[in-house]
View 1 (cartoon, rainbow, N blue to C red):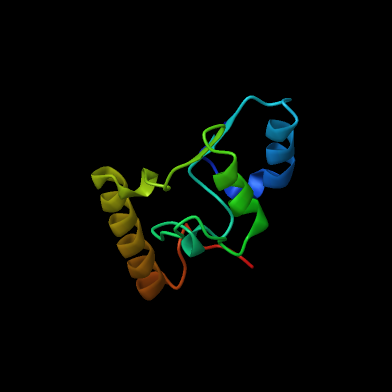
View 2: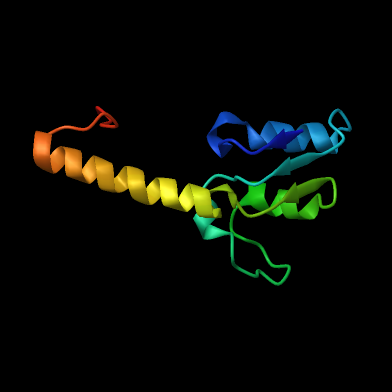
Length: 103
């Protein structure tokens, strides 16, 4: 199973239990909940403080976690900059934006 969408759409504990039980041969993901706390850090084999993330590391190579890199392509960065500028300009000039998120 491969998840490259959002961590929140999966039940990572259930996926890991399925891997441990042999119901799922493996799991690969480039997204985990609260990933900013884990990516880019070296825990030297020590606990991350998160049981789910620790289990992911313990289940390697059946579970592979890679950094979420999709937004680091030149095209994606250019789109983020252009869309952000358009949104900012729209709000300043019209008071709204087509990308406005209502809460």
